[in-house]
Structure formats: C-alpha cells, structure tokens
Image 1 (tube, rainbow, N blue to C red):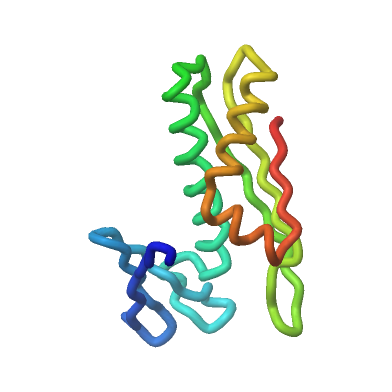
Image 2: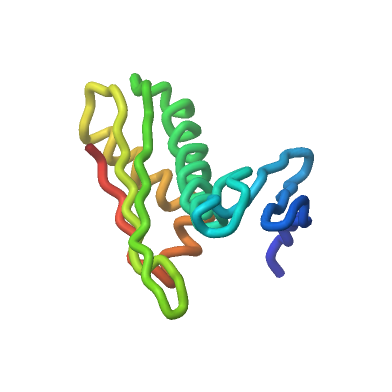
Length: 133
C-alpha cells in the first residue's frame, strides 16, 4: 500500500481558497476578468507551478549530490488549455541553467524527471515534454 499525502483547501473569500500542506499555505483565486478577486494564482497555474517545484527540487538534489557545476537554474512551463471540459492537453517545460557540461546536464534533467511525482502522474493523462535549452 502506498503512502498517503494529504493537503487541505478552505474557502477564504467569495472566489478564493487557501491550500495548506503541513505548515505551508498558498492562495488560489480567479482573476477579476473571470469573476474573482485576483488574490492568487488559479488552480491550473498552481498545477504548472507544482510540476515546476517538484521537478526543480529533484533537479537541485541531483546537482548537489554530484557536486555539479550548475547554477542559475530556471524553468519555463506552459500548458495548452483546451475546453469542454477545460483541461491541459499538453504541458511543455523548458529547463535552462548555467553549466559547462551538456551531457551531464541532460543526465541531471533525466534523473529529475524520473524522480518527479508530479511529472510521473501527469504523463498518464497529458502530453508532457521536458527540454533543455
């Protein structure tokens, strides 16, 4: 049996909610143009950030464990939004970093992808591509 991970989400306004994981919180809301108060990112944006955060933590761990000369790591993540029902049909993540060994950096990206819970979950329902700049 797998380990259970749990978060809580509660309403904090007419369109806003607060998510809590352990002692950490995140506000979610709709933009004003969609009837919200723009108090936080939308859920879909949090999904993309969750992918980035999960991937980044695995990438940084791989970099640190190998004492690799990599710095200034950045991710740009975009989702192709479809409708009826609304969903992401594709998600593209671009990885950039200051490094001097392309082969090692490609290996580190592969390690991070394999270790990322969010990427492994999303791959089952969305076209997910991860590229290194």
